[in-house]
Image 1: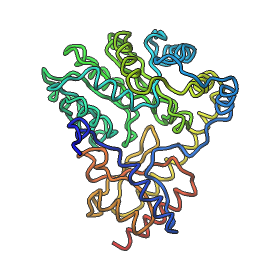
Image 2 (image 1 turned 180 degrees about the horizontal axis):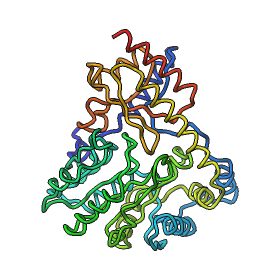
Image 3 (image 1 turned 30 degrees about the vertical axis):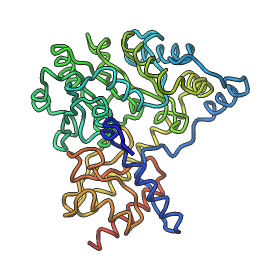
Image 4 (image 1 turned 90 degrees about the vertical axis):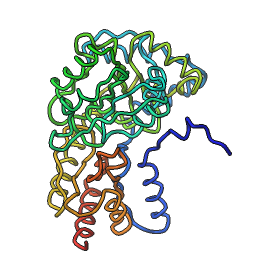
Length: 387
């Protein structure tokens, strides 16, 4: 069977492959501590679940407009207006089944063959994949440990060419937990405006911050019209399986996103959209409680990893990932990740799952219990003592 060049260009997300392998090991009776998947271990808040159940009972089980239910788009517009300090209308909001569609829609709506797009590396692997699917050239922007995994401004400036059409930023970032400062964002915004470049701002972890404050590049002068905000409910409200995300962009781009939505998923599940309204409008106590528990887990895992010979790790400022440098172990990222899974029953991801500049690192997701973190650290320490 001949497979199209477009599909051949598409990448994948290693976390799911490692999860499948870990689950198979568990089916064979082996114990595995899971640090590989970036998924909250908390349950969706009860008020949100009840809103979804109520919506089903009220027969929100039919099609909605491809752009999304108006009430949800109004709720999101109010939320973004309040939290980003920019005026947003419901016409600028498009509801999607998670954040990946926003990445793919942005790439396919903006990029043509021969265009270039700058993306963070190490970074979420779907950025590079979406750029390739669009037929454009992915240009990695290295995020270096010595810069706290922020952009090096001079290095970034050198990547800009007349073919650059898109810049992707992710703050707080996956897999590093790094945050871009206001000064970083202002530098990127200035270049974007001078060179007529669009910006995709992945803000999915905007509510999971421990040190400092969240800042959106869309809030800067002159950036609202050239920024696509990606946000959603998966991480903030522990709603990964509900598949609910959204984009906020200028109206022209939103219309093109709706066209792509019509050609792909038609509309997001309607009762899920109704639950999203309750998530944003209802009590936010559960969100803050989860954030506090993530912070406690962060402190535990960072302290523990830094006590293991060969490991060193910076304190992440946001998200729920630890990204230790493991060069001191003498192993490559893939070798060490495989060793920990097979020998210690600890599932992690090699840094190279997030791009070539992830070599020398592995990722631990600490979206798991304190007990699991303690057990995982114990196993890693024991396994490393045997090398």
